[in-house]
Length: 424
Image 1 (cartoon, rainbow, N blue to C red):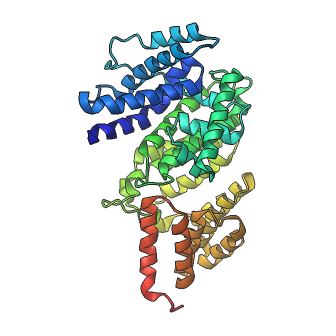
Image 2 (tube, rainbow, N blue to C red; image 1 turned 180 degrees about the vertical axis):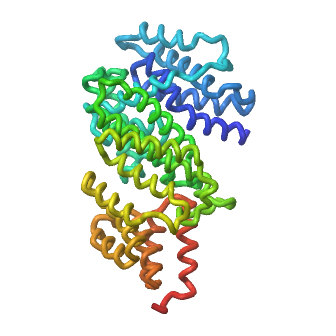
Image 3 (cartoon, helix red, strand yellow; image 1 turned 45 degrees about the vertical axis):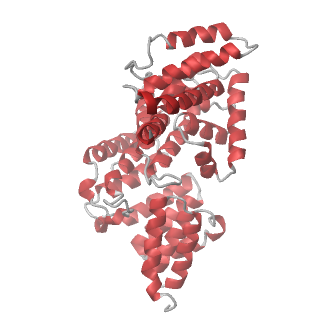
């Protein structure tokens, strides 16, 4: 029974976006689609332990969710499109059994859902949160942590966004070519946030959530293909390619980021033989193509930084000076204290820890709740033999960090300092 429950949870994570997209194409009501999928999840938890896991769990959930949506619509007393919606759901539910091995909906269905969630009539935070939930399958708690708000606040925000999509008749469609470019920035941000949640989970025992990284990369591939039309601006195409390159280059290191015991391995200590050379080649080629378009943007700059890391034969041969310069360019494009933390680390690697620490100390007021700031500060203080101050910074980082693998790394660093505390 326990194994079946784990499969249910994994299927819900993996198939959430596809099932919601399939339902949304027929329902046009995101809240109803979410409710129907929750009904299917409950039914899976009840039936799979007894009857076994279906041959195609995702198709099973799509079928059952469509049937539960029909049940909900039949119970509703009044609604404008009842017959039309039920006819569409009946077509979706045409198989005799939910065990059928159907192919997932075409990728563009999920892109339609993303553009719906990223409609400009919704606030930007609502766009991101809604897409993280519907496409990425993140829980309200996970999204709330990402936005540093309470769960009930995020739940209300998501409910309002879904109601606005329904009540305002926001179309479930890829926007027309003449307005699509202006909608790209939010969509690219959403894809990257989904990737980041998979690359370093905000909390829990799993450091990486590979299914989210794969989902984000897949959506970016589809988007790059969609933007190959001459109707789109070169900037939009270049930035989409830059984002895809960035994610590929980061994801290429996934096999080396944890050791066999599950402990975190820093970039400088990773076995580069474990890096995915095929993904690195594709990422480098993509960023070169993007830069040749002559329309630089933040994702292209970040991808260029990732390419410098990926192409360095060893950690010692990394061109940190150029990386620091690129972070300076990025800071001009998108001023951010977070970017400045990364620039400070790069400066520390090229000019020494004291130079990096000076930059970090200028940011102190902005980043007290951002634990990577405290990690960077602790590491630089450790390198400067200021052990007591380093320990205090590690403790502050531990107070803020919720990912188990990263917490274990911070504890190892802190324990290394303990025998020498008080000797500064």
